[in-house]
Image (cartoon, rainbow, N blue to C red):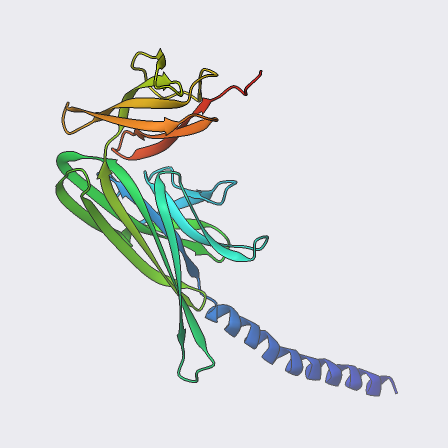
Length: 283
């Protein structure tokens, strides 16, 4: 009787192993099919870079942007917002004029549809007569959630000088899940603001206050109560040591924001806002 029980236990164990084994093989097969990396975004560098090849590890910040300690540049990526139920773009503040376009293409059976995303942006740089170099790196996300920039897949474009209004562009395509995604980045020349002068005018076109030229690198400026509009005279950086003058006029019936471009070390211009505050009437 005892021998029969042992035989039954052994038989059940063998049958259980036979049933479970294909399941394990299937799991391993599915795991091997999963992509080892996902095209996550692009990293754009301006100017020369000491690193020429290999992979550089990146780290995600609290805003979802990826940064690289050994690589200078600016990050752009496309993300899905579950709160807003929509696809969005996000980037470092130096990347401006973000644009997202979605193309839906039908498959062979008319039911299958492939989405193609096109993401574009612009980086403004100071106009120059020197060589301008734009570098574009693909950024990948691994299965374990880590990120890296692949320098071996870097794309590069050089131009002999970039006068105001001129531009150079690069693009990179890849796949994210079942969808194709293309990132395009335009580097366009502009002019940084060196100093500004603010002239406050009343409703009868009379001058109320006039400042000396100063750096707008401050958070706010207090306007007079009677100010109807302001004239802002700008000193812009040109090529070499040239200074270009420009004038802008803003209505000042209420508080307003003056946006200017600050020059960075790599020639990239960062948008900065100066708030001109207006006191309420009767205060």
